[in-house]
Image (tube, rainbow, N blue to C red; front, side):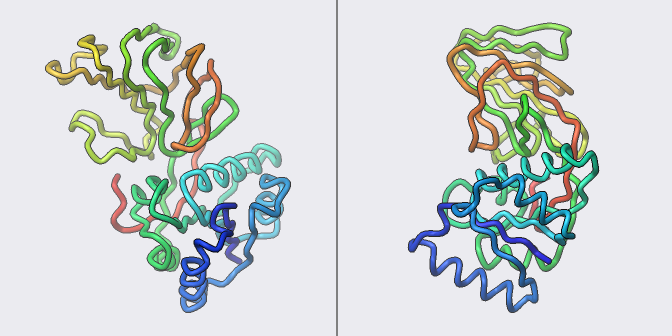
Length: 257
């Protein structure tokens, strides 16, 4: 059975027509299943874990990047709690015009189009990164000024210039330079530093203020700014970031990796 998890924001009048179109399409495709509405839940982790134990065929996040992040964390927590590997795939139906960069990168169109992707069921086993006790699929972002990066315990970088740092697993950027090639299947993260000053932290692209590193693990420290995971969730530092898990994800044929 497909389990459709509707985020809070889609359960409003604004999205009634969109949900009606989605539900008509998944019915036409024979993908009917159980609907769970997050606004009525006290514990999303428990709900997802119970559905996995009951043999859910697919867990489908209906909403935005934030919805996807919630469901990924619930699936991984089910693995941890039961000391098992969850093979249940994650599907995504993006709703709304904003905050759906993960779905776009995975080649998943909005609303009815996402039903066709679910039906085609193209599966990819993608890396899932961990930051502290939280998990994410796309990237971790933080302001660069005042941030210290401890990279695999070999060396550290302290950044004084304003700008942005991204630790990328699945890139939601559409304009990364050629030397940055994030691959969400290689157990490696890409560290992308872009500052407004002239200082460089690698010898790539020497005419710009952008630097890239491939790495397995790093720790981020900043006393003033949080880390933002999947453009959705804020966590405090210090936080160690690494890749040590994977998840089956349904993707579209136009995926960007």
